[in-house]
Amino acid sequence: MRLGELLVAPLVDGHAVMEPEGIFLDAPADGLRQEGLLGSGGLLEFPYGSFLVRGPAGEVVLFDLGAGPDPGFFPFAAPRHGLLPSALASHGVGEADVTDVVLSHLHADHMGWATVDGQVRFTSARHHVHAADWQHFAESDASPHIRARLAPLLPRVHLWSAPSVELFPWLTVTVAPGHTPGSAVAELESGTDRLALVGDLMHDPALIRHPGWAGASDWDAGLAIAERRAWTARCRARNTPIVGAHFPAMLPVAVDGEHGGDRV
Ligand SMILES: [Zn+2]
Image 1 (cartoon, rainbow, N blue to C red):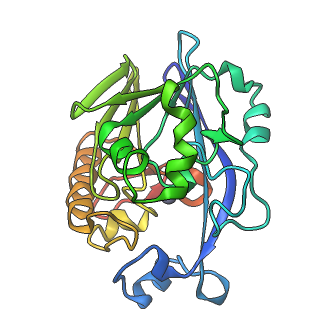
Image 2: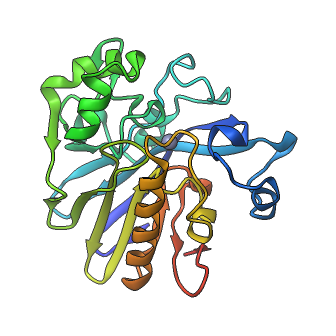
């Protein structure tokens, strides 16, 4: 999709299938059903991957990096997975062309391609990570398998710790803690067009209508709910569409009117 001078494309790496309890801590089953979230067998199915953004000065940015090639690393992956490299190639982008990687947070389904077999995958790219997430995942025992995967990335990582950082005139990242300590939202702006890439701040557009549904994998669910409410209000006020990392087909929705959640 075109966003002013920017080109934005979702790149699906794979789909996850899991019990709703893996995502929603206390959402009522009726509510999940009414929102169309439960597929066959009462399971949730959702995509994961990356967003490719091409900027006006040759910037090639990936927002998140899917779950990687190894099904053992992210055990919820459906059989067809590891699709990010081919999705990127289908847009005519080589892996060495990527100038910047922005990671919304460091869960396995968002940083999986950061390193493969101990090697940094996107060798030319600066990898932007909020310092609180790096500290939590790369420097503590929170998740040893993620920490091991992050270790080779150290020379390429650019930590940020201010509440908000302008990486390019058209790209600002803002910390929105809750899902993880350093979860980030990226706002794209070009001309009159805007888009908020919210990572896992909202698992599904239904969260625009139900911001109080707590996340089962949230580091601090209360904080995540507060950030979700604040970002929903901000995007509604600024008429900014939202896309979450796991939205259906990884496509944006509008946050207009009383309820929001219409596909743009
Ligand atoms: Zn996720």
